[in-house]
Length: 212
Image 1 (cartoon, rainbow, N blue to C red):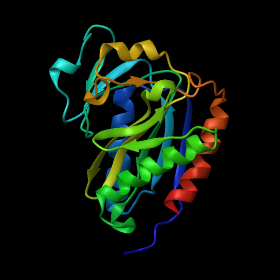
Image 2 (image 1 turned 90 degrees about the vertical axis):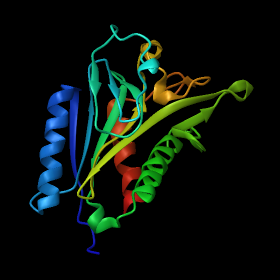
Image 3 (image 1 turned 180 degrees about the horizontal axis):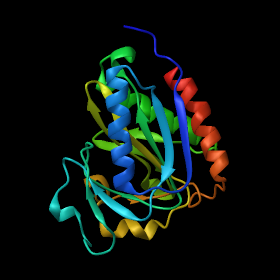
């Protein structure tokens, strides 16, 4: 197994069209697999939309007219993307990092947990529930970060989304990730104020710790 090289970072401040983002990821993944491209983490946001993963159930789309719905090749079920949410599309070559998808997903979870810790928030895994959760008053558990990945020729894409300050009512049109009986939250909802630059800096720092 070859040692991984340094990862490139791509950062977009404004909304990126979803179809264009997927097309760009497809090109990057092909280049990485061919040995002509560099591993990349892309930080961005989208205009309000829902995406359906490969396990999405039609009954979990509660309001199909609310926002555009995109069929996605990533794993998982329905999720929401929109302003105030930091999305990280992660294109890494597992041929160089070990062909272990479970370990990769675990590292994505650890990345989100480490990032949240930098803002004084305790993020946790939950068995049988994908993503990162926080425990609220009364032992209520809300989701703060979602994970959905795809792998082609052992190169990863799609990735994670962290709720910074989105309109949480936008989640009402779906059953997020197919999990009912729990809510969603954000850093702002937890009383944590952070600028986009703060979030990006924290993501980059904790990524280096987890994926070194």
